[in-house]
Image (cartoon, rainbow, N blue to C red; front, top):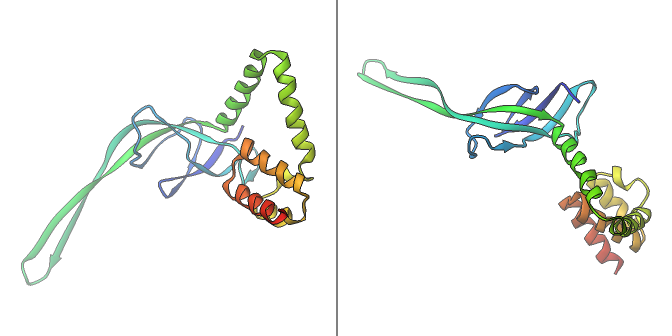
Amino acid sequence: MSSYAIISLGGKQYRVHEGERLLVDRLRMDEGATVEPRVLLVGGDGAPDLAPSATVTARVVGHELGEKIRIGKYRRRTGYKKHTGHRSRLTRIEIEAIGGAKRAKAAAKPKAEKAEPAEPKQSDAAPAAKTEAALPEGYTSMTIAQLSEAANGWSREQVEAALEHERSDKARKGAIAALESALEEKS
């Protein structure tokens, strides 16, 4: 999908490519565990995306010690000399996929639907279509700030449909809180 991504891991930012290995500050995970760091930017194919919906999947390869750093202190004419040093604890990770987790979930979802009988599938689709019809126009592209401002002008049914949508699909805490407060004002 994209050729590079900028991720945030351990308070630092890294520009990564698929298959790349890099050293980061020690992570509290076992070797072989997978990590999904926060994605700040995805780019490479066309314009960079500053609000990416893609995920980056990384695997912990191993834990290492960094290069030894020596520190020497000296004060002239007093005979004071002090030497110390340290080695940073680091974790080596390998970037497995950029945007691959979303594709894997999307590919797994249709397979699960095929395994279910036809009748429950139709009954599940009817409430979903009902709630999407009741959702306010342009709701899916709204940010939490826009949602909290616009929720006061919606009808009670639209607020309830949006709240149900957030709880079932997105689970954005700020959006749920804004919709619940708007619902209390309607009561």
